[in-house]
Image (cartoon, rainbow, N blue to C red; front, top):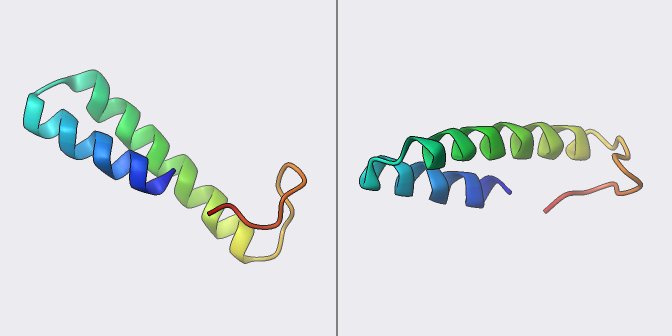
Length: 51
């Protein structure tokens, strides 16, 4: 999810498409939150790791 967010950020920046930029930021933030919570050992949605 983090990699997809980065790809969308780059594509949105290069193609000047603001919706891709916005989606990239959202996916990057959600992916980072899930990665941090997963690394602390908390089970999220029945899974211990998101990667």
